[in-house]
Amino acid sequence: MDFSGIRNIVILTGAGVSAESGLATFRGPDGLWEGHRVEDVCTPEAYRRDPALVHQFYDARREKLGTVQPNAAHEALARLDAEWPGELLLVTQNVDDLHERAGSKRLLHMHGELTSAWCLACDERFGWSGPMGEEASCPSCGERGRIRPDIVWFGEMPYEMERIEEALQRADLFVSVGTSGAVYPAAGFVQTARYCGAKTLEINLEPSLGSYMFDESRTGRAGEVVPAWVDELLQSDQSSPISR
Image 1: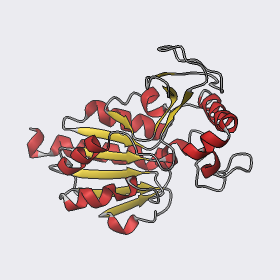
Image 2: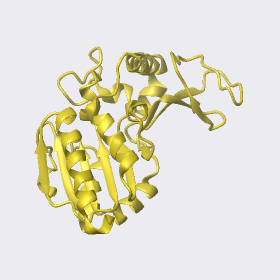
Image 3: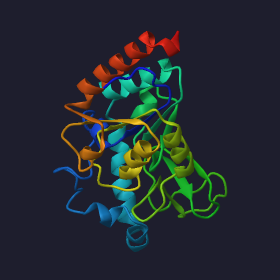
Image 4: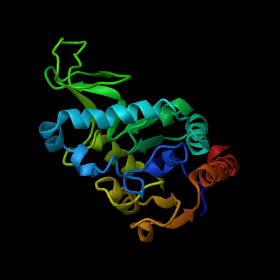
């Protein structure tokens, strides 16, 4: 793919980016947690039915997050963020904080964050580390037992969709990294980008369900393919007449 003339970039990342750091994907063969379906612990109905189980699930994931580190794909995307002179928006479906820890700044968590909590009593959101459990209290209003993980569950609207849509409409290049292509609305981003004239690239361990919609697909480990692509893109920008 010819990257010359590219100015505005939108990158979507999914669980495949963090898998190499040791975080299990939901939809892979290791994507179940102690025999529970994702839908049993990642829906508003599940939270109302068994809040203790839901908290146990997210407390375990938060604890696991403290044992892993960003990998080469996270670091390459952070480098691109730091060095790219045009617009760039990194949209992640992941709820981990590995992009931030690698140094990414122009970042949006469309499905929420493990390190954030949401008070259902006063609607405040705030940082959270360690176990949450059913009896956590809100630092803003003091209400106890009304705190939930600040995670977008199945059936809820992802965050900042308007901002994402606007960025896709301005994009010259849309890149999808480590996603299954199975979950909407993220699975439809490539269609929006293509319709608005952007070039489209997929980077994945294996072709996704939506691979046919991309101009180009590159397969392999994100920790190897993403750094190579970032090098190629930055070199292309340096040689572009627009950058001179």
